[in-house]
Length: 426
Image (tube, rainbow, N blue to C red):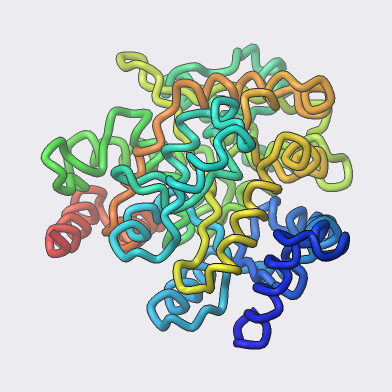
């Protein structure tokens, strides 16, 4: 709804509902409203589109889902916010965009709505780390969590058993296992990760960097991209690619990485849990009987640092009050225990509630849920800094890491260059 006539229809529908003039108006308070969602093209996107007609049947609001790749999602929605063009009512917001949203006032601040509807939402059933990480930045609730991702270790247990190996729990064990499991003559490799220039390589390396004791930001709030710990972790990462990754992995994004594991080419892969349902799907996976999932490894001399990621749903602050209320109704509906369970039974791979971790139907289909529960309870959602400058820092790191992986740069030189760019932002 982007015009005065549609606004009148929405207002009339809401008034009719409140006045009880007709059963239809009471049952469908948002008739005449169309909500357009800008969605990341993760596994949850087609499931949202599949469920949308059910929301329309219940409320009268039409929901359209525009499915975009990561770069296009960021570019198009930012342009929509800055231009006040109201192209999108709802936006799937990456965890790392929270600072930018808060600083620029892109989305509706949801704290009052959450407090108003706390009993309906059952906030206590949502993991605090997801409520905070996937939408809250310095006290501003700029989005509502709907798709929690745990950083996990997926491994081919058959290949590890044949090699006499246990699932690695430390990074030292991980590196040794990856090298041992690599047999290029047989087309088998021990490890795979994102190497593609841009967000893909930056995000995967930051995950490993955190597990090896590195950090992107210092305690003073300033960037530390070229710290000794970061340089060392990038050396380890580079050597892993050279010794144990499939040919061409320096060009992989999330899709290429996942496919390598599903086809049995790579034995070890740190990944977001959203992809896990696919490993058990015989239509796309050759490792259905071989796959296992456990918590991510960490350096032996440090406490576990489990990465948390995922997506919140943000309401565009530019749209009308009627659309905002309809958008909030959609968020509550999608994240309700009943619908969110259905969401995941359909393969969204996007968990949120504590009750989901023990639900018999979900557990039967997704036996890895206890691993997600442990990660959500004890995870770190700030290892990728959720600050307003994050998108630019990610660009600097995406260039630096890829240049090292393809052999064009020394780790220290590459991170020195990225640090100099980052310092200009501050």
